[in-house]
Image 1 (cartoon, rainbow, N blue to C red):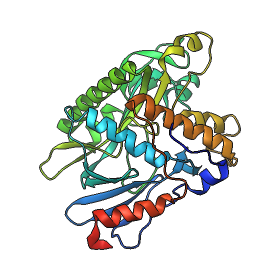
Image 2 (cartoon, rainbow, N blue to C red):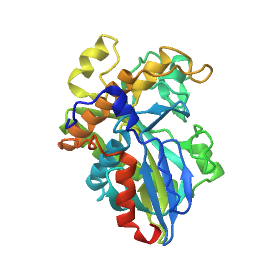
Image 3 (cartoon, rainbow, N blue to C red):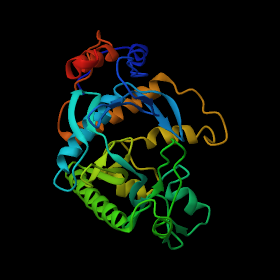
Image 4 (cartoon, helix red, strand yellow):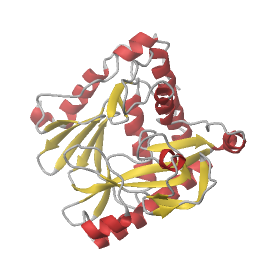
Length: 329
């Protein structure tokens, strides 16, 4: 990890909390990314360092936006033969200039283990006694973090107005038709192929790709395109393969390099859906950041190049945007 010695407070201070630039049109603030609608059916996506979980923003994490963008870049390149992606260019380590797609109102979540801690995860529902989840039937006697017989698709709705994702079954999708039956078949086929590639590459790097979510849109030609991000520590779970078997046998949580670290920190202290989430200490956020950086380095084989300590990330991004989109600056 190529970072300069810096105090925790300075690292937090240099986080990218927002990426609103008044020169650009079509601004929209999402939980993590700030986006812009540009002429010529283009979208600009800037990954901030905001950290979301349990349907809310918990704080900021150093280097997070850069890790997400550069990790997704690696995976978009690795899977371009399976499905086209939305990328046009990368003006900055935190920024993607992308095709503007007609987004489909579903998130396709592929899972290969019985795990999780959120309302849409498998384990909390299974632990409460439910045995039919997302239309899939599970046997009695399974335990947390157990591998499934095969990867399964557990879709959720993706409200275009920014509402909460909700579990949905294949039968409901075919009945209500948020997408056409042909689109649903293509979504399932492509998602399983992307996931298989992800698991294969992850295994070669000593990692287990546990589960992930994909978002898709359709371009002007009607082509299915994968968008947003792919196989990042925000959208996926990654466990260290070398210690999984021993920790599973001992009933311990796997060693993870993903968002679950922070979810578990929160759920040990409160019910995040009913109680206020306590402030997260800077040292915990730094430890979390290191996990994201370690995942990037282990997956890509590249050394992470942290931002220069004396240059605010926001200023660097603004210069890059002025170069990439001079018509607005």
